[in-house]
Image (tube, rainbow, N blue to C red; front, side):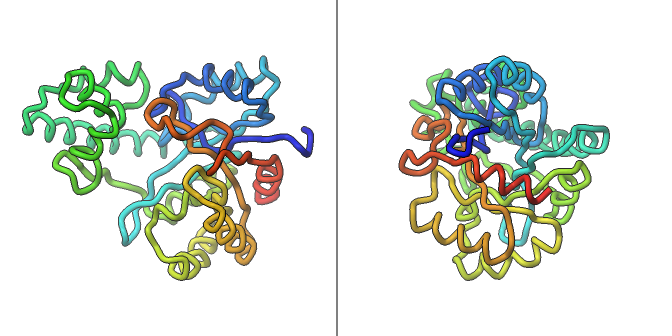
Length: 281
C-alpha cells in the first residue's frame, strides 16, 4: 500500500445503523480513492463478509472492525475493535450484546407506543432492511409516519438520553469489552473520546487504568475533532504508548454532514493510522 494513501477506520452499514449496504459502502470508499476501510457496525460483524467480497473486487484493504457500547461510572462510551479474527468466542459475546440490544429496542418501542406514536416493531424492522435494529431506524419510522419532520428532530424530541422514549441498554464493563476484543486477537480503541464529556485532565487520568485492562489505541482523527482536539489526543496517545487512529464515523443519510474518508474539516486520514494500529497487535 502506498505511504501517501488515505483510509477510513470508522464507518457503518445497513448491518446496523448505516444507510449504505456493505457493498455500497466499499464502492463509495473506492470512489473516494481510499486504500483501506474498516466496517465498524455496533455489536455485529454481519456486514464484514459482504464487504470483503466487494473489497477484493475494488482493490481495497478491508480491516475487520466493530463498535461496542461500554458501561462505566459516568454512563457509556464507545469502543472500536480492530484486526480481530472471527470465531465462536467472538460470536458468543456479540450474541449476548445483541440480545440486550433487542430487549432495549422492545422497551423503547413500548415507550413510543405509550406516547401515542403508533410505531410498531414491524415498522422499525422494515426501516432496518433486515439488519440490526437501532434508534436511527426508529427515527426513520417516526418520520415516515409524519410524526416528526426529520431524523434529527426525532432524536431531539424523543430518542436521545433524557428524552421521553429513551431507554438505557445494558452494557459490558470496560474490562470485559477489552477482553472480548483481545481474546479474538484484536486491538481495542477508544472511539471519539470527547463524547465521554470528561475534561482533558480527567481523560488523561482514566487512560492508564484502561490501558492496563487492554486498551490499545485512541481515535485521534474524527469528524467531531477539530484541530485543537486532535492535537491533544495525538499527544495523549503518544504519552500513554497507544495507537493514534482515525475515522469519519460515517453513517450515510442519518448523519449527512459526515463524509466517508474525511475527518473534521474535510481532512483526510493517512494510512499511517492503520500502520500504528497494526503495531499494537
